Length: 71
Image (cartoon, helix red, strand yellow):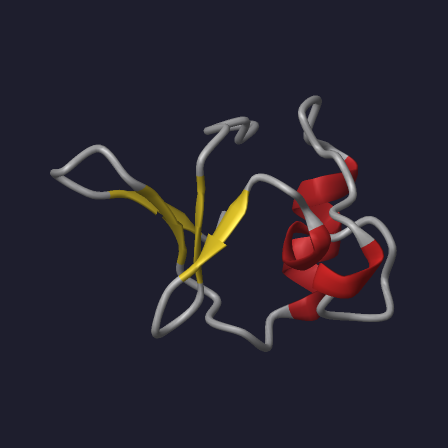
């Protein structure tokens, strides 16, 4: 899994902005995935953490604010 829960409680994707297969696989298995609005889509895979309304971009990737990870 490419997620890490930091000491501040934030759950961040460690794959950066180019781990498309991992982001798609994780989103397909996430019960909280919800596609963001069309203007906010990042990649061609419709079901991807990169396209989820619950991701918040940061300098190196994104944080999952739903913490819906299938650990």
